[in-house]
Picture 1 (cartoon, rainbow, N blue to C red):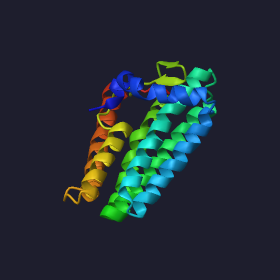
Picture 2 (picture 1 turned 120 degrees about the vertical axis):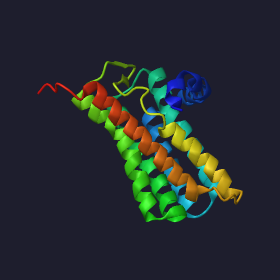
Picture 3 (picture 1 turned 90 degrees about the horizontal axis):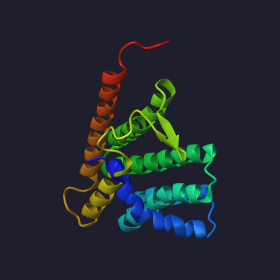
Picture 4 (picture 1 turned 90 degrees about the vertical axis):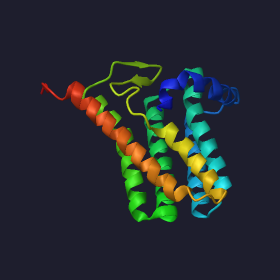
Length: 208
């Protein structure tokens, strides 16, 4: 799947929204913070069983997360702090939402597994940056050894969450209980894909 490979297509969708925020003089870090708050609100809505609210808050949080980079580029003021803050925000929102859905719609084991697989799938990349390095950084965006590797990432996770939230709301048997398990398995397989890729390409002749 890997929607990241089609980022040029999706940029055409969210860039206009980011451009509007830029023209309204929203700072990029404020947009990131709003993404965190609204993502937290989505998790709380899942906790309270307000599925439609949870779904729309998740969509808004994701849209803001994509837009902060647009604003940073248009303003010509991308910062290293902003890049780090964006990573932290993403993982906070993902961990909170996946954990909430896993715990309250499946069971604690799936909450733990969903969070662990999601975190490892993301943080294998900065480990690769540190140990292997990266090719180039363009406008603050790292082109890394794992670029395009892994078929199921954050965009796919959010789309699946939206789909299974709708199914849950419609009281269809394949709802969030099954959805969180499917997301966890797909994320795990995608993580293994990245590990295998790293082993094949960097598993020999480690230079101390």
